[in-house]
Image (cartoon, rainbow, N blue to C red; front, top):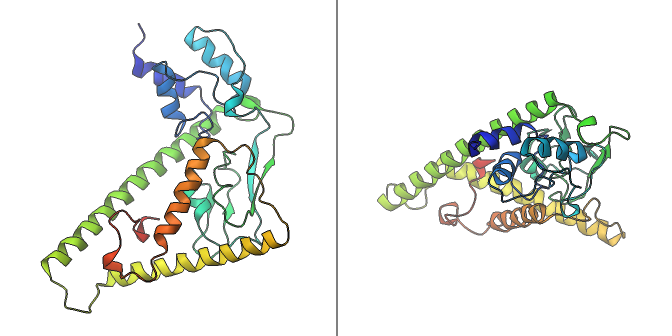
Length: 273
């Protein structure tokens, strides 16, 4: 019998590595593992399309079946394009991009590196001013006719590097938070004094909060003009979960009246992004 870990590796090698989560999993690797365990169908990857299903069916010794419509539809590969006149530099799209294809900084205009974009759509829902469009760039070509093994491998490498970086940043943020709690518990800081890192954290929170307030005002202005949000039809449960998580982060960042040292232990550290 084929070893399950090896089978998961072989399945992952046949996936396009767009990391779009349309399959119902957090990325291509978790989906491959689920298929190998028999917990997911091999017809749940819209970017791979019919060709991808045929490749997986051949590997698994199963019949070729249609793409599950619950996971989306096969389409020409899109490219995320940011309207620079509307971008407010909130960084939410950067946080959502699974392959670090968006560059920018807080309060500054962001842009998409076209060569790196996998067309995953994940940057669209979190944008508070709806300034991101997904534009088809492969004509009528879909699936593996619109993508290549080299592009897939490059996307996988960027995704793995990003995942490793986020894990390092998470651990560093937890270590800083633990150190601050220990310092506060020891009473080492004089009354009314704050450490430089606390001052910097407060400054970053203020910058983020100001950007989110500008986003809210622009969104209300667009709504008053009858301009509806774009690219949010048929949002998958996983993408909706990302939107909910972003909303929760925004709520937790609304701490302008809370001293830095009294923030919830579960609130994100500003240095984390």
